[in-house]
Image (cartoon, rainbow, N blue to C red; front, side, top):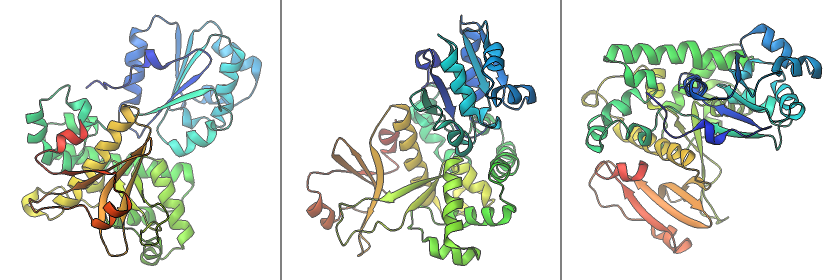
Length: 373
């Protein structure tokens, strides 16, 4: 299944590095190899897992690195985060070889971003590849079909391998492997966390708090660790594409809550795999949470692919009144409330009083596609 929203040939530039971020198994290697199959550029493709490549690009030896790239128009490095000090190696490539194109992919963004950030300042462009977005699937399926498959997306998510799997058991097996073999192992390996139990328990706690305010103190108490460690683990989980943090929106008004955040899973299937819940909605009571998680993340995917440069928040005051999603771009505020029932929903008067020019929209199961396509 082809990824539709990034055309590599229009993104690469001479003497700049194009970095393709994203979790494992979302198609970063595929999008790279598809581009290479059709390019007229003379290229060299290597993997960051290759010890020889690691030695060359981490050496900071100008002569050796120039020799490695000599005669090529394009150097492509898959899984570049595996190479120590990769940022400096990429910097030498683009600085020392005129007219060279460079592409690097990385699945553990917390690692590759730290290693590429400072050396590549002003020398890189970055894109993020997510599990398949509804706007991509809309090229393959009609709106009617997307609605028909909604329960599947809510329960099994949208990793490419999961969507292509034919049976429920296949989907579960793939998701379990993603969690056990890729997700946690990547994090444990790169961040030198000694045990996975605390990290897994943290994810389990978050999985039951979708759409709710999360207290770091409460998490620390439940996990029997300090707040700083909780905060560090949450940061790692965000940077490794497991969860997405939504902060509270405020214009410094005393009655608005901003000290706590909400956390959503980047993929519903990963969330359900963490707590081993794959039963259908006749036998579960979290449809509302999964629907909210799905729509928030799909909206973020859409905006990422369509170059939305605004910011996302939620809003809540101390009286408990809240709005699920606030979007701000060019000082324009849009507010969205996500609902799964037909009850009348009204924008809180306190919000109207504070932000009278806001546009407000209710998103439900009968109009949600307009929100994410």
